[in-house]
Length: 64
Length: 540
Image (tube, rainbow over all chains, first blue to last red; front, side, top):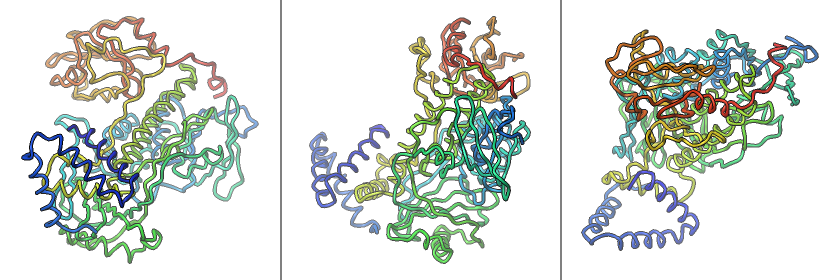
């Protein structure tokens, strides 16, 4: 994806999160993730991304 | 100084002797217009303030003859690195090639730029009055009456054909005309600290998100001349900005960060200030005979260094237009194009600045959550790293000038140097030795032709310099420099015989695959408008 399109999509997602509010943000992110997952060719494209994100959160520095 | 009742009319009064006002005075002087600058402060600014000068700004300073001293004193740079915690998540490189006239960015304290611009303005015939405030302003159909007051003196009236407000974010001119900036002001605050410390690090932009030295904060560092570091760090939302700039608050955070990155030489603080991001602009920059430039016209966030750089572009856009309106070579409508073009630029700068701010100082939980996600992913996943790029200032494309017509040969000449874009620079060999194309811009119009031998073009329209750019290896002659390694041909997408009409501010006005003099003259006439009779030549 071109950097400008990535940037546009990123900002649109931020703004959608603001509109639904912090309480419903996880639901919105889960729905967008699932919609994107469903558009991948196979689980092989998706599983490493899930594993990597989980490992990063478990092993990386904690924000705040 | 003449009184308002007298017949003497100043051509231009510039309110504000900061870097934009002084550069504008120098550029107007180059165009033969002696400007009068009034500045409320007694001299150059204190504190380094705007420190990143873009390549485009250096070109503009070059028209005033001060690119060399700024470049000699300044620290050029091309790259930047961003860290999440202590791990690198982005390394960016701005476009730069061997043989370029300038590096993409040069760091220098604002007071040095002001000093060079001031000296250039005086050399070019301007008058600069320090410690002088604007206290009144009255607009008339054919002139503006301003009232000024020096330190301890009584108010004095002046008459000017045109007034340019370059008096900054708290513009007095704006207040006197009851004009308001519109847009968004962000809550997030940054402390700006200059310290003096010797270092051997390369000159680059450094950014840390959530560093162990200042958990949760974002820190920026830039090197400046004279062994000075600029350090910017983000305050927490619950911190009182007045409290936060006290040295006992600032110095421990700076010390902690210097220790983290291993800068152990002795250091001392020089200047501390606080900043919050604003995306504000006037709705138009021409109000009768009063024009606005720089921070008086628009305020953009510091991230991306679009503040002073866009102000210098305002000055570059305005100087040649104002000079031509003043001496009757152009109609007043040309100044409406100043407002249209620079307002479009401000809106683009604001859009980029807002995006940078949303990343550097997230304004809500949503931007913070997504920012943290992007940084965390960027540790492993290169695909998201472009989101961290600070979107450094680049020249803005201007909207098509009304009435200028289509770009008839667009299909043959490509997108690279289309009308509304800055004319690309390239090294050239001239009879005076090695130069760059951009050194030929800045005064009058240039018709740049590409040919294998000098192409006669009689008669050259009034005020246009015709140049033929010969192929690499050809011997240059007066009026026909040679492309050094073919960069110009490549950057313009030039066919042999094609021509570019370049404005005095280095922007492409029009281009033709096979130009004829009447087409060039017609474009110029439409762009400059109908010259009004001005009273200035008679009264000056």
